[in-house]
Length: 304
Image 1 (cartoon, rainbow, N blue to C red):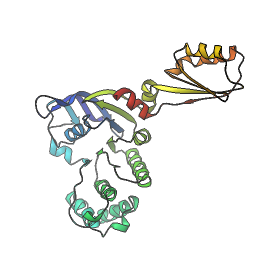
Image 2 (cartoon, one colour; image 1 turned 60 degrees about the vertical axis):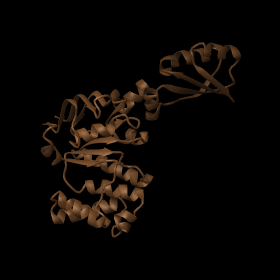
Image 3 (cartoon, rainbow, N blue to C red; image 1 turned 90 degrees about the vertical axis):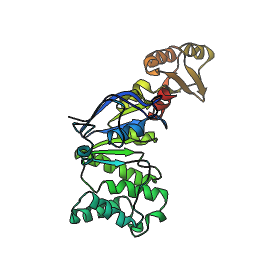
Image 4 (cartoon, helix red, strand yellow; image 1 turned 90 degrees about the horizontal axis):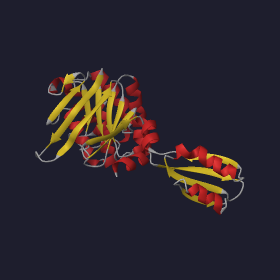
């Protein structure tokens, strides 16, 4: 069963412009799905609808097999970390305890989970500090960590790593992976493309409220990655005749100290022709490698 099923979802706040404009996608149970896009693309609005915080304008949406209108039944089974911070104005430890009590987590279980999360998110040193005395990154850690206190089937994470240092960020991503292996479904948004590449099973990129492309990271990079650079180490610099023949293949060329850099869109399709041309003119290829497209390349290619 899909944990999330979205068909032709639309949302307008003013009956003029759609913040979410007829998007459709699904998220499988136990999957980590990345929803990427520029600021204002519609990511947060989509998450607010799926987590029953705001109403949709139109479309069919099911969460955990339930119609989105069954908001109370859905809320009992999900976790949500929004961009905006929200805390009780007390100590870090007290925030954990209050949040656990709100979710009716049993006392002994709450204690063990709190200790585990304090350690994981490096919060032990500040556990007695008032939440308002923490740095922005520390506050974010508290906000994310406490969400794991309660049991849930589906977790919405809207830019959860903002302000976190690289070590804590990687710990969080690895922890999310572990929880997903144990059955948790995650919908994840971020502006850090490396995070999405590392974490997500599938990725959807939206722009101006519309779904542009969707697939796993390898598929997106292979099909929408834009320009790639082929690097050839040769036994000598190429002459003008060879250079002109290569340029006629609609590539950009850079030749320096016996190293030939050839950049083109969809260069994979012409690699055999490039090698044939170089060898035909008497050059030996000592080494060949390719700069692969990154997820950031894909993002710029489809959103700009």
